[in-house]
Length: 117
Image (cartoon, rainbow, N blue to C red; front, side, top):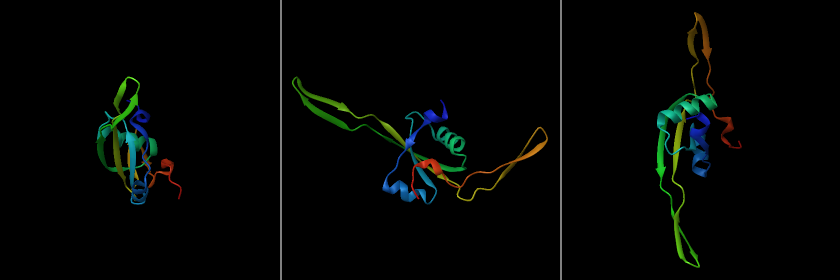
């Protein structure tokens, strides 16, 4: 599964906006995605260091409507939410590739989350 298939969209509410100031970002993710998949996708897409991932599954709500043939009953789709905690003070990581030293610096916030600050 591709990283962009795992992260569906940000889940923006008042509570998630307040939590974003503390480094906790909320996403709607694919229903079959694991915590490890979500962590790798967020680290690759947003270039941040993920400390923890908490996931929740939601069942679809029951919806009914009246028609000529009677009452039609259905459900809204199931979905999964992930709260990702990122490192607000990341240290640069040093590693070697073919004997050459390189450093990787992580960001300390997700700018593309959709919050206006």
